[in-house]
Length: 227
Image 1 (cartoon, one colour):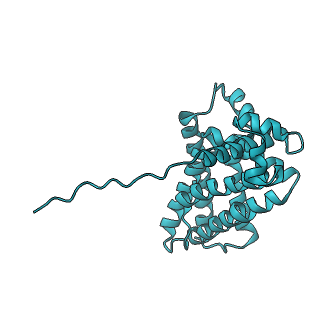
Image 2 (cartoon, rainbow, N blue to C red):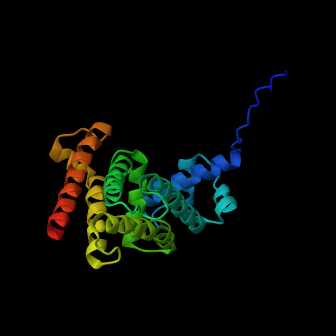
Image 3 (cartoon, one colour):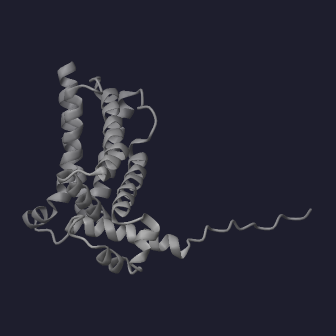
């Protein structure tokens, strides 16, 4: 009997054009977040990406198109992280499973937002958009903020019995997310006060312990109130 030969599935080659496009998006994300949209020239973006300035118009139609592409990159990145942490389907029916999913979601948020360097560029970009909203913020809100928050509210409902769309639930979920975000936007202050030289995996693990303790306390208080 003849043995079937080992068949190697060829990997998709990344073209130079794809590489240039990706480099421009990352450069725009970094510079728009750091300097603002109006404060960043296409020449600076091209230099940061090590690309020809004409490639911006070729790939994106111009600076505004590049801002939209940077927003889409944020949506794709966070959708992937959120999908791993909280899933994309209906919240679990079992309260214990729902509570476990909330803890997992917080742990994954800290691992990305607090510990991953590229999260800093994303947060800076988003903060700029929140201060001066444009169509890019609409893309991020519709693609990430609203669906992720809604999903967490549904999980909260299964974990506590509180209505997902109640004002209290929505504010509680914002509070859970906000405590994690602070460790990114207040990073410099946190490091100074804690005496840390940086925030890596070890420091992030300490943050995880605190934010999950907070979640546990909130859940316990809700349970006692229902008893």
